[in-house]
Image 1 (cartoon, each protein chain N blue to C red):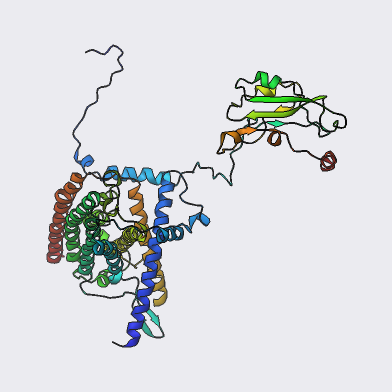
Image 2 (cartoon, each protein chain N blue to C red; image 1 turned 90 degrees about the vertical axis):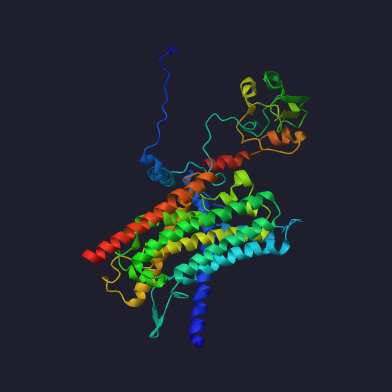
Length: 173
Length: 345
């Protein structure tokens, strides 16, 4: 049948000539290819020693931020939980008592704050929704684990460690 | 025989034995490294710098693995298989001249264990014995895949031994001696190397050497895709290790053989023009010889990561219909050239 597209290619199978049947030129060609690869630059990144540079807007594990005086910024408004398309975030709010002003910035705070890392899709919408700049996805990769329950990260894993403001000032100087 | 002579030879044997084993050990590492670099990756590099401790780890692993002898196996022969394989691999290096004579305290010490005047024949005999290890192991395993591997090994090495022998006959016509020591001594300098007079013979010889060592593209006896593990399917622990080891020793010895028969052994260009003393020539000669051997070992590996495995009928076709006629043609050609040269020049 006639080809309409004109792209049909007819392949011919010619019998091999003596040069091709000797195989030696083909072997030499193959050897030259492998030896070229032998001296090529190797693209492997030796992982534990070398770490591939991360992109600036890489989204990793969440962290709940503190303000300049080391108080938790989160006010348990629930906007992050609401914005989360994967329903990964839950929290229980509590009222700040007297004498806890150095711990929590607002009058209301999250007593329990849990993110299910198996549900989370690391889209970053919680980050955008937060009015208090309290949550950022600036951590490392979320590591593997054995049990499902171990993927529900509480405040113990999410809240960033308390830093000493005086020390920070000294370091800056 | 005086004691000093025996002692001298004993020391030489121990040194050669150690060197052979170490080279075989590090060939495994080199193989994986070469494989890695040819496939654009690093080979093993976690154990020690550049993975230099990898062979030791592998050896240790082999020793500590559970040793299984299948219930249906013929136990004595099952054990004898790897033993024969490793012994034949080790003893074949006895007639290879590793260097010229060293003069120590005015006494000449030969760097060849035994300069037998039928050295080439000896090597042939030992190589022919080597197939017994594989055959016994494969048969005694009582496993059809092992048996298939053993049968393939037997028929393959018998077929290729003919081609190998015929290609060597042409070489012997040129050299006029069967002693490996003398063959090497004749090739002093660079222009006297046998490769220049026997290129076709060398081509046939190296192809047959690949087949005799069961290396890719002729590794049908242990063809994983068809035969699980070939003749060593049922082997585990150090017995498997011995089989692998014997394969690498065979590779080393056949590299040494090719280097000494065709590439001048310990001879290097301008060896007598540099004004070096005899001992220095010997030392450099030994180094040069090992350099040639390593070159051949690298070539073995290079081929392995370039060519795919032959199909069995292709293997037999190549052996019987191409290599043997080529070798015979080479003999005739060599005879005619020798005759013409002797009559008219």
